[in-house]
View 1 (cartoon, one colour):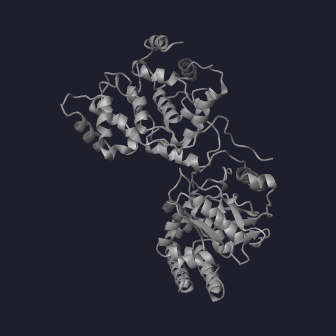
View 2 (tube, helix red, strand yellow; view 1 turned 90 degrees about the vertical axis):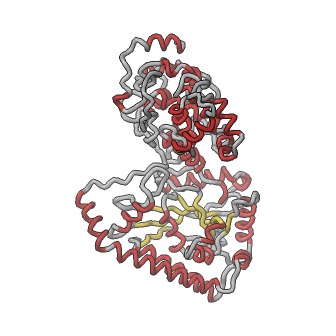
View 3 (cartoon, helix red, strand yellow; view 1 turned 45 degrees about the vertical axis):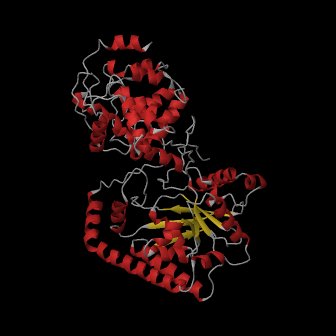
Length: 535
């Protein structure tokens, strides 16, 4: 069915009830007042389509007795724990300062610490272990056999889910870590991290990856007694429900690695710190208000790479991940750290359901909407003439998209968009998502141009209110800045501007250069990126 035929059919439908639900009416004569839920950008992730999103965590404590314990311990025990943590941190910093006396960063990079400094290194690690004990981790259970640095120069740790994962560093000795160069300047912690002789990454250096790999290899092959290097291969925090793609950095050297598993078998998960979930202050409070917290560290057998794995770091990383996932009893997932960047980008640009945008993109690939289908563009062109677009059922949605209503991918997409479980979807939300997925690697100005007709009849007649609605998807401009920009473009006070006026003005003013920057670092999500179950 063509859009015109669909429009004719829909025009005889019941009046739009969008206003009653807090949505903007698509009628061009409707009020210009914009509601917050215009395109459902206040909701982060859907629960309609059941899949594992490794970046979403919910902490709910419904038991009244447990809540009473938390409030009681907050008053009686938390102040003592905070004092203990502060004293432990200051002690570790003091011991690190003593151990580092007379050493430069170059000295730490060229040879391992030895003699009395090594003893102070262990004392510093012990003081940091006391910090964790003060913060409820009284006992850490160790299982398996830890390999020596010569047997496995690298410890690959997963899953990475929390700021408390550094407990592995203070519990095992301490090993070295791979860290940003800027961490050496952090008050107190900078000295402690330096004393562990980390491998620093210079992000501004284009050869940073090669230099990091070379330093790991040099340490692995050195006759000196360098500590092992700890690497969290996932590269970002997850909810531990699946192992996401491992970054290949730990596997480029082609040396044996020891997989290490982190587990937190507690009643409530007050540690997981993900992209969509409780903030760090709430997690700290909930953790410190517990009587104790459990942590288990399991050392798996050393994994020695084959010739094929040495030649292919990604193959090596995937095979180690399979071993670790099997030991944990969780699936593997094709999600990666780059997907978090995409989700964050979508959230900043007020794209509906940013927590589900990667899965939505996969469904669009499966349905043939990506990379270059014109169907959604055609719908946008006629969007304001359509009726009842806030509440499309599955059959109307399929008819409009010209897809078989029995298509399973369509049903999965529909479930993702049906955030409120009303068996209907918002067409505007879908179109904004589809345009973001299609243009996420392009300049922001191209995305804004693509969605203009969702808010006004023509790009040649954009009012101030509609301009604000469009520019809210720019990611950086507040309503006040949008108003200021609008009046700067509308110098003749016509009461409207064109998209070309807006584009010409912003091109000449450097403060708007972000509108013309391509986002080529955002990874393209292909169809079929499913969670893989372990056997």
